[in-house]
Amino acid sequence: CIRSSLARSAQCYLCSLAALLLGCGWVAGQSATQNFTLRPGWNSIYLEVQPADASVEDVFSNPAIDSVWEPKVRASTVAFIQNQNEAAFNRGGWAVYVPTNRPEAINNNLFSVAANRAYLVKVNGTSAIAVSVTGRPSLRSLPFQPDGLTLRGFLVDQANPPTFQTFFGPSGAHYNLSTGLQTIYRLNNTNSLWELVAPTDLLTRGISYWVNTAGASSYLAPLAAVVSLGDGLDFGTVADEEDLTLVNNTPNPMAVSIRDLGAGNRPLTYYFYSPTNTVPPAWLPLPAVYSLTLYPGTNQVLRLGIQRSQMTNDTYQTVLAVSDGNGTLLRVPVTAQRPPLGPGGGGTIPAALQAGLWIGTISVSAVAETSH
Image (tube, rainbow, N blue to C red):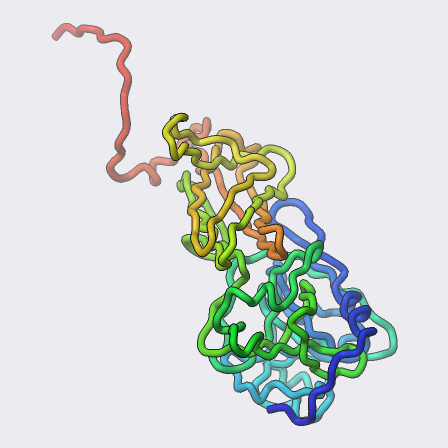
């Protein structure tokens, strides 16, 4: 419930909002570093990466941090109040962490963080602090609270951010031609008030918003990417092919680009076929940037393969950045491993993994007779 009347955001708030998120830098393999600038008072952030050490105490170790809060799954919308400083906030519906050197830490029930989750972070003092979180990006997204408010951030392209209306327009649960955009609130870091956004305002990556939903919704973005299993493309030690399904949720054609953020060799391939059969189908090396067109309201399966002979290490890791040029930017982690070496070396598969029926083709170049 909203405990006081809403106030429109001041123009100067846009400057403070932009300062909250510094950016997202990429390092080797599947790791990304997400950088936040947290101002004194309350901050609403969206974590996109899964750190190797996911303990709250490690991720939010800066001594200026007073507490970290996460809304419990399917929490009541009463968790939302306009004034974040109201005492009523410090009640049920939330998991909380305070530094373990304080007596109230005995009530901690938030012990770890996860990718694609929203957090409220309260900072003490009068100076902003920098927090960097390094980890693996994840394509997994949680559904919205039906007919209620969900604290959520969104995978937008910070170099070309969309408006709220453009981003949520394809989703009937968030936008209606008759009533317009469902109510969405952002936190004003200056006065700790949640303020209603305008449909023409721009989204900011790394920030969480209270988003109202009509009915159920699992909406990700105008462009969605779906994998067969898990939160990325994992070839393991035996799979040679994985599918990445791209979905255009808009009524317009979409120019999609897939950029390999990895450095060095690129053992990924894609299956090429000509609709007119003028060129025979083939597996081709995936270029550094691969482009395709998605027709309105359709999906397309991109078949990706792995050439383990081109891997320079036993484990290959990279990230594919998938964008639509209109404000959506998704990141898909990719992993592949070489089969373990056999007892004699040479890259053979151990006997323990060879059990079962094998199908193949044998070419015989000569035959020798033997006498009995």
